[in-house]
Length: 334
Image (cartoon, rainbow, N blue to C red; front, side, top):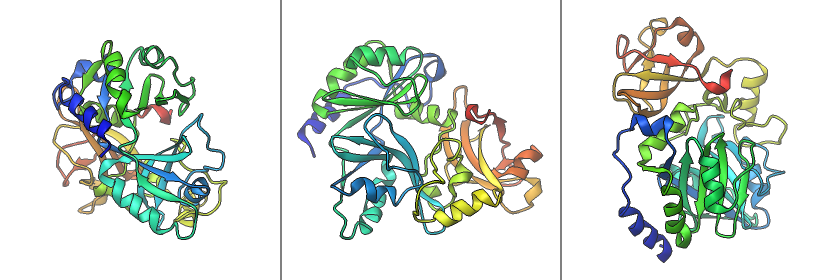
């Protein structure tokens, strides 16, 4: 392990991050700061790294530069996502950010296809500390702390010698900083932002409708089911990638029958749990993609389910007649 990363971990243990439950005051209204070590990094390096990764994912990476990140999926031959992630450039590396629980398995799988390409794939967790900053005034605070901030466009990036940041929303950022500089940056941000535990950040992502493939949902959803098109994660103008024919067929034949919805349920829930509707009888009509403890109790979930079941207005967790899902609109769906 990078000695500087050990120092950072020791520093973080001394910080007050709030409780595991989401604090309603911190969730939306306040400026919050989170450690994102539960998100991992893979670095692809070498002369053909960008070309290689372009051939493996759902988005077009040919024009990828250091000024903007992209969202992308990585599919099996069946066109179902094994992962989805942010992709971005820094210091000659193509970096992929995804849940830490998938990092090593995805790295190993992608490395199997490198063959004779001039590419290496490595664990980059020790290279960059990952932080999240969200809430009113996040952009101004980031600009003060780094002397720069990403431009106004979603996925815009800004760089300094020891750090960089990606704009995920109007006032929500992923921040990456060298371990040796991380404590100082944390102090600068925490002087005005409230430090919170990882579940608060997870809830913010669910609330924003941003799905993350996790071990329980690997190889379950074609990108369209997870709203990856609406989130800018699929290109239909690029060349082939694993599962591309199935993804394209689903799009052009208009055969999509499932999509991602945001809902609240007054019950504890885990990714992968099935959901039911009278319209489906005793067969599941979908499953939970992501879940996070919600302000005020219960859980907010992102669930992939049959469009017809959603339109019926009666969807239940775990079994027919189980806890009901109360749906809320996703901002990006208009």
